[in-house]
Length: 296
Image 1 (cartoon, rainbow, N blue to C red):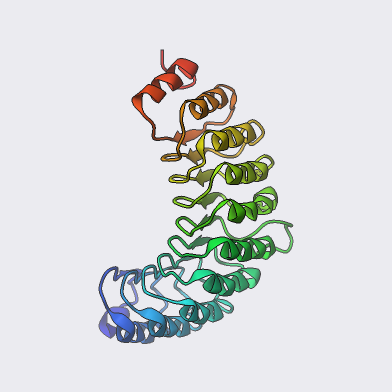
Image 2 (cartoon, rainbow, N blue to C red; image 1 turned 90 degrees about the vertical axis):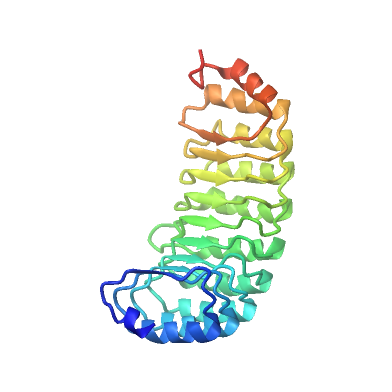
């Protein structure tokens, strides 16, 4: 481990799936403590646990080079996230953090939220497959409203947030409304595989109407249905920023397809819609707006 990390030209280290455990994390952290060349570290699915992340956190308080850190699926609990959060309070180089799949719940999100209130360098945050629920997304949204660049009101540092598969329902999405209304830097919001229905889609639509920066919204695998699609497409009449909307596997039927067809006729933005529906529905879409798709 030390021989590798002494090579000052190494910029990326990928140990994904290698079960180094807590001891391996300790050796790795010691080797990286004063390393100045490594900028990307992937130790996902390495079984480092809370003890291992404590070593990594100590390293992050000293290392001034690592910008991208992937520690997803490592059996890290809220206690481990607390170690990481404490380190991030003073770290000024990490820009991308993936802590998905660790199931640290809303208690862990409290620690991450505290970091976001003060950290001004993190731009990408991946929290997928953590059971944060409604309370967790509330803590996160409150922090996002405070994670701002002082000279630019409502301008946060985060550009990508992934809270897919985190047990969020309509109530949780309601907390995102103000974030979408006011945020000036978030470009990608991933909400896949949650339990967002038509009411949640309406909350998102309310936030999207005047949003000027979000370009990608993914809602795949949420049962938003036709009514939810109606709310979202109606918001797109006012929104001029969104260019990618993923509605695949969202319980959309004929009524929703017609809403999509209508907005494609009138929307002036080059919108990419990711959909999954039967051949008969694709025929409806073709008949309704063949010109919009360039179909003769």
